[in-house]
Image 1 (tube, one colour):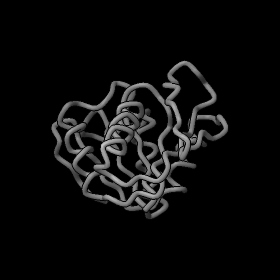
Image 2 (spheres, helix red, strand yellow; image 1 turned 90 degrees about the vertical axis):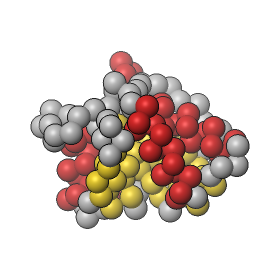
Image 3 (cartoon, one colour; image 1 turned 60 degrees about the horizontal axis):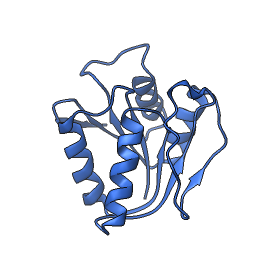
Image 4 (tube, one colour; image 1 turned 30 degrees about the vertical axis):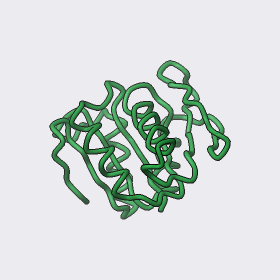
Length: 146
C-alpha cells in the first residue's frame, strides 16, 4: 500500500502521535510512505516510521521524501538505503505529488475546522477531489474517514 502524509508545522499532539503510530502498525504492509519533509508533523511521522521499521513493528519498504524548494521550514529528514529523496519542488506541487502517489492520505491538522490558508487542509481538499481515501486525525486523537 502507498500511504501519503500531511500535517501542520506546529507538530502532532501526543494524542495524534499515538493514533498515528497505532494506525501505521495496523496497516502493516506499507510499500511506500510519502511525506513533505517539513518541520513539525512530517518529521514526527518520519521518526515514528523509522523507529517502528527498525523495531520490526511495521513492514515499510520505502520512505519517499518530497522536500519543498523553500528551505525555511524543511526538516532535512535522513533517508535509509531503501528510501528516496525526490527533487525539491514548490509546496503546492509537492502536496499534489504526495496525494497522487498515495492510495490513502493520513492528515494531522492543528484544528478541527477546515481552514482556507492551510497547506494541510489544502492537501486534504485535493485528496478529496482525487477521490483518495483520507484519514484525518484531530488534535484530541479523534478521527474521521473520507
